[in-house]
Amino acid sequence: RKEVEQDPGPFNVPEGATVAFNCTYSNSASQSFFWYRQDCRKEPKLLMSVYSSGNEDGRFTAQLNRASQYISLLIRDSKLSDSATYLCVVNRRSGNQFYFGTGTSLTVIP
Amino acid sequence: DTAVSQTPKYLVTQMGNDKSIKCEQNLGHDTMYWYKQDSKKFLKIMFSYNNKELIINETVPNRFSPKSPDKAHLNLHINSLELGDSAVYFCASSQDLGGRAYGYTFGSGTRLTVV
Image (cartoon, rainbow over all chains, first blue to last red):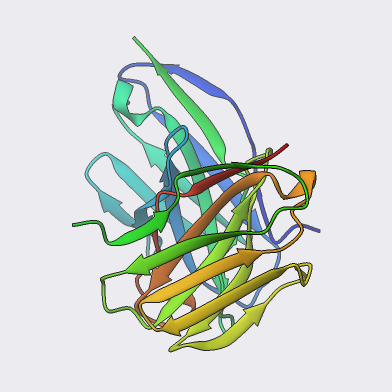
């Protein structure tokens, strides 16, 4: 079973829409969680960390459900510039590396 | 100022050749990584170094040899290149071991094509 699983999409949404992505992880010892954004032919860039109590950064909200072993990312009021691939990333409590999901592709349409 | 810089950005080479990719970070981070992103966009770790010491060496053919002359540099040398080595190789660094606290900073990637 993969360490991290994401729905690859694609998600095609109109500007202004709200869109949510989920990601599941297999190892209950996972401790750190992040969402990264990767634009076409570019490097991944940190979007936000995911904290146990959930956290918000502007239009972006991240949540963690340890019992069900999934994290989510909610994007409100989608902009054209939000079009990218969103990567779910986890790290184990005793681990020294990230495990990446394969990413969810988002296209925001005018 | 580029935080994590990789060179070259593009590399096209023939099968059987030997090539190197260089990576440097000016963030003062202690840990550096090499990741490979294949055609399906899956990012998989290859190596990790902490203060010039090898921490992670995943199941990578021994044709791949990392070298860390100091904690700001982590280079990747590849011998006898094969078609299957074609991918994008990303260098990354983190402030803490494993990036648990603050995540990674990635370089812009090296797109390797073996023909």
